[in-house]
Length: 348
Image (cartoon, rainbow, N blue to C red; front, side):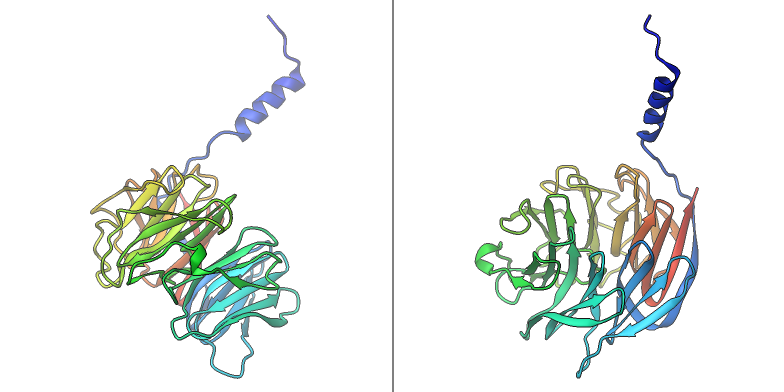
């Protein structure tokens, strides 16, 4: 019998422990209000020190994660700034993209709050929905069609300049197919893949393996066909496991055909918890370090949690005024919506 030295044995034990899959079975959530004001917030994100948020009337700000100090700012412009529903970041900057005409990308220093316009687009149909960076150089934003494709703008220099992708290089959409700016979560960038989701007359998933140069389009079983139906939110745990939700915004209690999961990178989607759990979902997020089996959704029916890939859900909180959610770690998340931002602590 081969004898393993003590140090080697300890290393093996540590390795096995560190690689063990984490599993959560949350049964409750504690909600603490961090901001309470007259503001609508659909875009939040965190960095090492702050929770950043963007809202209506050109308002944005940050919350110190250690002290809970809130600092409020406002876009400096000569005219009224539309509601900001797209928010992204690099290490040193945040980027804000208000909805509607004109579409303007603001690059804002995290250090001194200096503001710079790095992209502008004037079109009566323009309406951007979501924005994200995959690394320090490459970012993307998507919006409703101004022609016969979803609007896509891309940066490759850290947000200093942006270009709009020609419809000749994008999949065509059908009349009445668009994107929803519900929670800054219908654009997902994971490793080498980019995912866009649509709603309305058609509800589909657009996948690119080369950061927007080429796209594949996949059908989904999510409810669709009317102006306010379809996918409102998506999240991918990695580049293969993904989840989409939404439903019928005008019938928020309908919980049929509004949740689906993929295990093959968006090619095929399976309805889950059909006729069960929440109705209209504004935002869904995977719980970090959960191997993709744990998810949390916020929307018209409150905060819901699943620990089995979305096959069943439990309601943890009845707050119906939350539009978006992002996790800081496996047990801590922040959510925002109508007139507030809250810190959520999940426990078993």
